[in-house]
Image (tube, rainbow, N blue to C red; front, side):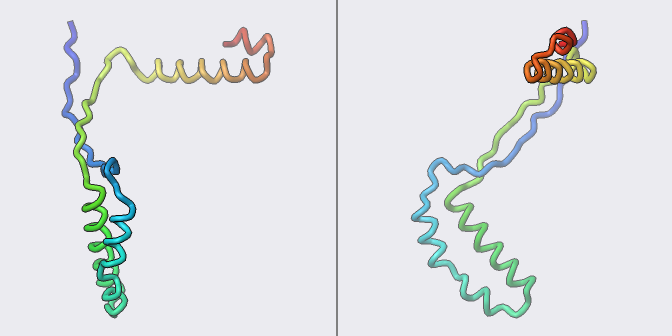
Length: 107
C-alpha cells in the first residue's frame, strides 16, 4: 500500500473587500497628507512616502486576511493523464466546430 504524499499547507494573504466602504476610503484619502509628498525633492523618498500612505489606507479599509490552502497530491493523476484529457477536450471542440465525421471518429 502506498501512502499519500503529505506536503505543507500554503498560506496566502488576500485583501478582504467584504466590508469596503468607498465613501469612507475617499474621505480618508482626501484628508491624507498627499500635499507633503509633492514637497519632497528626492523622487525615491517621495515615492516611498506615497507608497506608505496608500498602503496604510488600503490596509485600514481592506485588511489582509490569511487563507490556508492544502496541497492535495494525487499519485494516480500524472502528467500523461492530464495531457490526454487536454487532447480529448481539443478533439471534442474541433468535432463540434466542424461537425465532420472524421473529427467525431478522432474524438
